[in-house]
Length: 460
Image 1 (cartoon, rainbow, N blue to C red):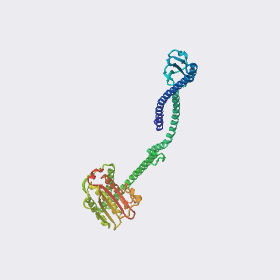
Image 2: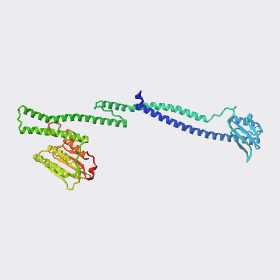
Image 3: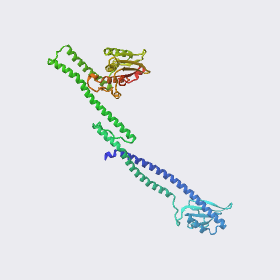
Image 4: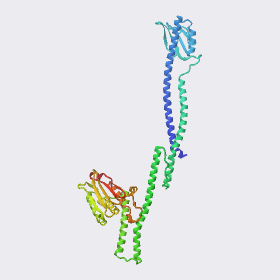
């Protein structure tokens, strides 16, 4: 019962009932006031017309008879017809006829209550006066009161309002119940989603608002499902990436322990390289966690971007030359200074260059170009490698994502380089993107705010 009182349908019905009652009450008061005024106006006009007709009747009688003789019976018939007391006086003010003698008699100056005398003219001369009372005579059939129309109107409005209210409440109940069906379905889907069924989806609805809500809910559910899938993949990928160097270190140590390998400088160097790789991987994961949590501290200073780029390019040049790859840097003079953490931006460019060199075949080329725009500095790393399929481009900045889905490290690193690059660029208030065409290489571009705009951008 408590749930019923707090339900949306019950509140809709109550709100409609209150609005309907307020509307009917307002209309009733307005109609009653208006009808009363119109009835009173009509009654005044009707009495005026009646008085004029009585005056015309008496005047015509005087003209036809040239006097007041035998006026009494005519006046009594007229009183029965109009339902009012009629008194006629001569030019001297003496009553010559009274439709109801019990209220007065000939020779007495007695006017009906609430009446006024109207002159009776014969030619241009006043021959008498006539007064019509506003009180009904007791021995005639009463005239219907116009004010009773107002009561009848109010009763009709009351019954019509009750009928309309009952019908409206029933209609609102049915319509609200029908409209709330998709909402109840959405609530049920949300409950199952909250219980852990991330594959739950809301049924589409034809109602625009609820339809958009269903679409938003389904989008949220898909994002949650994708996030959960990424979380599970992250756990599996981290475990895989950590297990590989640990397994190698364990294998070498067991071999040394069992006397299969001698602990010479070559063995120790191999174990050391695996430990370095494990340390780098852990550092990448720590860095990624800090940037995603917004807790990475950047040591930002204004500096010339070409100096950072030149240092990063020269750091990878031996590797490029060993593979026969032509590495170039095109940097115009007079570039605007940027407010950056040199170490982190060098790390971004290093990740992009490592990725480009790894995926570029021998005798290929890798080019770094810089463009100074109005409020940003745009850096592009272009390679002549195998390219990236269009369907893979939206995912290349995801954690542990490889275009080649094999887990063999010969096809790529841990899959964190591009993710870290994106996080570091965004931490500087910039953005990064990629373009590629299979067989024609790839281009990775990142933009950083320059000059006075650098201090206005978001960062950590």
